[in-house]
Image (cartoon, rainbow, N blue to C red; front, side):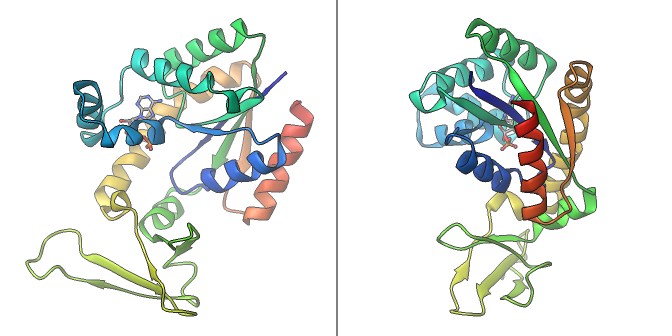
Length: 235
Ligand code: AMP
């Protein structure tokens, strides 16, 4: 039996970090992020990929039919044979029902829904202040001020948003900000959408007794320990 887990949490709750913890400790099961799968289509020039790019740019959801298909194809890759960590999926009760049916048909089921709870202002600061090194290590201008130098510099023509320039104090390495973290209003919109879309799913999975709330404001190690406790009990 595989281990299928749904990770839910507002952006900045540390889902990526905990997904790699789960991956390393539970059979190397992959994180399946539908957002990443759709973003990967950026390099494709066909009409289908362009249509998806357009919907994403408008902040709209991709249809359930397309999303489920993309997830189905991903689940058929050999690395997902022992389970998967879903991130950003399901986003609608229809997707949740599809997933349940699909896993059922393989004799599998969702083991746990991990709901990583975070104060929304903290969620905003984690996203807005996030910068990453070339090796993929994450820092935050608000919480790692002792290790990084940073400033906002206005665009010469006043274009929005102002640029965040950040570098590591230790070696001067430039730190990069994800373009979608640069727009404060886009982050707020994502948080807002998250609240509206997750509540029906929380209701859906609560009825099945699968939801585990986790305090995501705790240290990374404490959150991982809590996740381990839940997953070991759920298996
Ligand atoms: P994310 O990185 O999870 O915020 O996803 C980025 C964008 O991809 C979303 O704003 C949607 O346009 C699309 N997307 C990601 N996951 C889903 C999903 N499960 N259902 C529909 N659209 C999705």
